[in-house]
Length: 569
Image 1: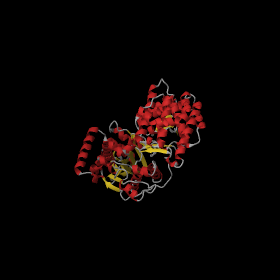
Image 2: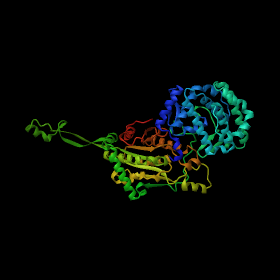
Image 3: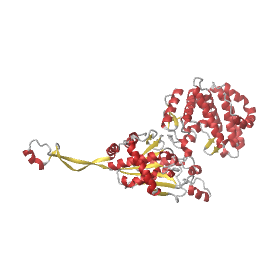
Image 4: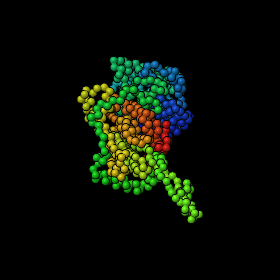
């Protein structure tokens, strides 16, 4: 994934810490984070307030802790049944009413928990800064919504707004005061009484919605604030199952929003498949290889142990003749004379001899998108060790990688522009599929190409679905009975040009479709290995890998566990 989407991933340790806060503050032991989303037991918890949606997409503990605090207060102080009963009908009013209720419960943070209050204030101010920095407040709709939230938040939290924000909001504040003044005063007075507060909130939501309707009645499609990666949509539908699309991020259990359209590729003209050895100068390959060999000597990874474990999991015993001179088994007629001449001789038996034979082909598909660059040395080391061990175990294996040849679409996007930018063009980038080690190559012949994944400029963007499809088709061409594909990634598919020309979840839906097809109909075991996060949104069997403590034997145990049938289902 590229740097622009790094905020979409929530590391496992962060999830666990935030979930502990969530349960402790709310008193609901069923609440937990999973893949960056909050669940109440097995039911997703909707998060509609824009200042929380934005922070849910970040990966740092500060943001996830603030979201946990906010949702815990919502669970503790808001009557969900009453809230739904009072919910207005119009989409815009629903969003505003929902936002007002979330701000109410955040203002009720107990004085005995000053840290919680600080987290909430810091979170809102961070969202406000993001809003302003994105330029979203430069539109009339953006400044109206920003002013609405700032005025309400300031009153409820009894917090002064920064001077530059006050100056920006003054014209809007003056225009809102005549119609909203009494209702705004009532919010603070009634914040302990949800029903009484709701009367004022409904009035405010109705007034703001009317202003939006009047200004945008001729162009309803513009009822959204979007600048760069900042988005605030007024197309709101309430209910647990209808969380905004910003919730459908890596780790979500439900369907990713969007239609069932056929996956399209605008052009394959610029796609290519390359051998990794062709991507490196011989001198650089030699340098990388020396560094990798030196690391293996220092790390102390037990390759022999790993090889034995892989042999036990991926081979079957096959009878391969007989073993003579045994102390038990069937009598060897050729040794009868020795029994007569030497009654104490016991090695006169023979047994069937069995040799482990592999019935499995294993493929490793490496996500070579931008955010994976930080792991490239560790990945090269892990792959090199696994290839050695699989070779010793007699198991055929290959290493593949996927990236793009350009950022932001490259020649494919230019071709789309030249064609007049037709709507919904499908995938818009130049794919680059890399073969680091072919299944037909022994490890020793692939030593110089495996290290090519240490080359930093390989890492760009990622179109995961087509890469998984490519890897699965290569496996299907193999004769082995069991076929296993490990997909090693740190997040969801991301290609900027495709994302902008289609919809945010276009590539996500295709990845899920590909995994489902090859897993269910082609019999390939597709296993996800998430680097610091949960990939179960895409792969039914997946485990996370923590590389923060280095690469030891425990890292390889994750691969063994998945081969043994463990992992989320």
